Length: 180
Image 1 (spheres, one colour):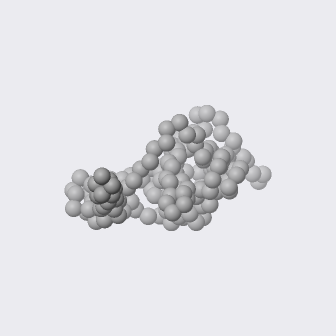
Image 2 (spheres, one colour):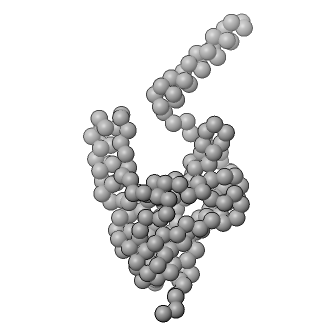
Image 3 (tube, helix red, strand yellow):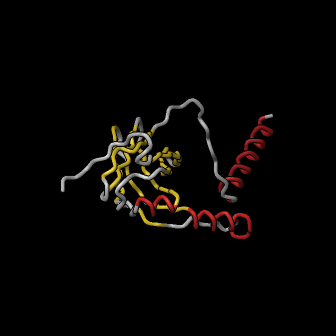
């Protein structure tokens, strides 16, 4: 009986190694009912200078690794790449390169969206601000999407956040004016 149990454990272990190491599939763990460890909101808009997004950390160590938005929004705001990030297209992995539908999706995504990849460490507790240089004189409605990574021992966890930006005729935003 013990040999059968050991054999079954080895079979399951071999399958897991094949599935997640050899094939490279992602292992996703979902924890329903858990409060978000990171929150985000637009803190302020300084016309012609910058926009500040605030990140509140409730527990743990986190970092922003990716920011994406529609290209039209970036152009309307005159957004520039935030410090610590570079513009990168969404890549195709080896398996995806042979899939015409995936190639078309990635081509459309890269045409319509701007993607910044980098690293912005969030304060362990409290709020951190990420500044986006811009040239627009008013906010324009749109969505910024953030990927947040959290180290969990030998692995990591990913969280996705969205921050709404409202146009001047939308909900009130803290808009700071600078004396001339």
